[in-house]
Image 1 (tube, rainbow, N blue to C red):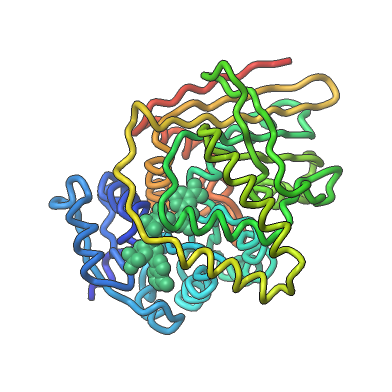
Image 2: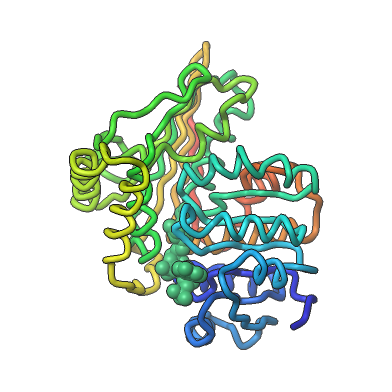
Length: 371
Ligand SMILES: NC(=O)c1ccc[n+]([C@@H]2O[C@H](COP(=O)([O-])OP(=O)(O)OC[C@H]3O[C@@H](n4cnc5c(N)ncnc54)[C@H](OP(=O)(O)O)[C@@H]3O)[C@@H](O)[C@H]2O)c1
């Protein structure tokens, strides 16, 4: 096994893992496509466009800290795409820390993000390593919009929305269920406050005449990222799919969870959720369509003297995840990260850089207005 391939894509056999490999190839970065099943990895790699000109190897690995540490040793970055992250993520973080490499992942699960912040932020910082969860559609473009909002203005309060037209993958569907067992929280005057559960919010999204039904989605990552920010004291983050029926179904399932499962002890809650999740049959959606699967990220920032609204319209949410992962790995291989320890990709490699890389591969319209 050659240690000359500096990036490991763990979970390369999945829908999103394939996309990460596709964009690592675009950056001409040699990589290891790793996962638990050699046949599924080989089958997945056969479907990556242009793979014949990529420098890669396939490695089957057991999901243990020991085996993963051995695989990561001597490399520089792991792109972890094995979810749900609350179930599988911590082992990979431990292996990255033991091997001394940067860790980025695609989680959208705030409870896992909080675990990384509290438990692993300091040890990664001590080793000058980046620990950047959510390097993905949820929530990199939303954060780019938020950071543009606060760049020049006296903005201290933000409302951030991610509204996408996408088909959730197998592990994404599993991850959505794992969100129900935690309080979704937003930042209000520097305190994390719970959202009411099983409630949607109508949001006006550019490109739609009707309002879109959005949801706290376990709170998003930004309230945790901006907690203790020197100027931003309040932040609400909503997310969702522009398929209203899907969103109504999600909210109804959460209401059912609140009624039947919420009052159970923590362990019973966990096993009830795992039973639901394990009952979902694995599936692989078709590759997304650039003209159908769109994204819109909105940040509205307010300060004492008005504010700013930033909108990023683009396409192909899952493809964006492949781009943000590969672009972040690319920068971490060449430059020292702007921030070590727990952070976001925007903080580690720069939000302007990530926006430029999104623009390099996909149509992007950035609109900024003052009010
Ligand atoms: N935040 C975002 O915007 C965003 C975007 C994309 C994805 N994601 C997240 O990323 C994760 C993966 O998504 P996906 O679209 O790639 O899903 P997917 O197509 O279902 O792939 C899941 C991957 O995880 C692997 N895996 C599952 N259980 C495992 C286990 N016990 N041990 C080792 N590997 C295991 C699978 O390997 P096998 O092939 O061997 O089953 C596969 O490689 C999900 O949690 C999803 O929510 C988030």
